Image (cartoon, protein in one colour):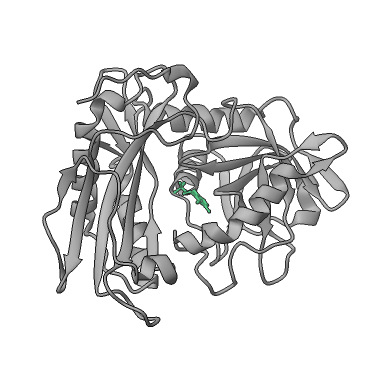
Length: 345
Ligand SMILES: Cc1ncc(COP(=O)(O)O)c(C=O)c1O
């Protein structure tokens, strides 16, 4: 076990090598039992489908140190289910939900000294992935697969906690209407690198942008995703939580959790529907949500020459704050969780 010397309160979202990761191989129709290994480098065949044809998928979830010292995983069964869906879309075998959660548990336990202490705001980010490997050259599914889970301690993805960020609408599409947008597959993210870089370089009236906003690929009239996060908006009367619905959006576990919280804890109406880019004045607040982004309030959105401000460019709105407090309270164990949301390590 390595001694760790980490400035917990100032962690960003970058890779820190931890001690042990889980690895299992699939061959001849079955996963092996898997094991923890110190080796953080994969040695794979040069013809691996993951390298040439993007046959791979991944997940992202977090372990949280609770106030009583125990460790919480937030809805890992949902990540397992989404990985199964991604694998099915790319013709890969998926780990069962039990195998997925057990691998996450083992990795957290083995790297517990990398888990940020309660109160620092940090967490241990888990990155499960499945890749197609083995000797191959044609476009076909791989003869073998690797399922692995590693972890790294993280702080906020967008700096500044609940500080609002501005975003800019990209002219690129993130995914095709009937493509792989709903699966968590690497190709979607490779396609987002250029628009993401362009968004971060863009300047309009002295403003800078945290990431790109993607519109629906069929009509380019509705917001789909905010960088690697889903969108939610609150109607002007403060009474309805709205989030886009589309087959090309990644079904965010955070978003579905917020839908539940908005309805059952905040007493809001909730709606999965269309959020038109030219009707943003119907909303008083907007946020990006995801495991990494948690809730990042959206200050404003640049679309062509027009910049639309929601609540404020400098402060989170009241509903966004309540959603954030409730969600992070559940994750860190200071607020009672809905049945089945927290799995203890
Ligand atoms: C494209 C995209 N949208 C949304 C999300 C948020 O999903 P979740 O809340 O499950 O982390 C993520 C991150 O996983 C993502 O990569």
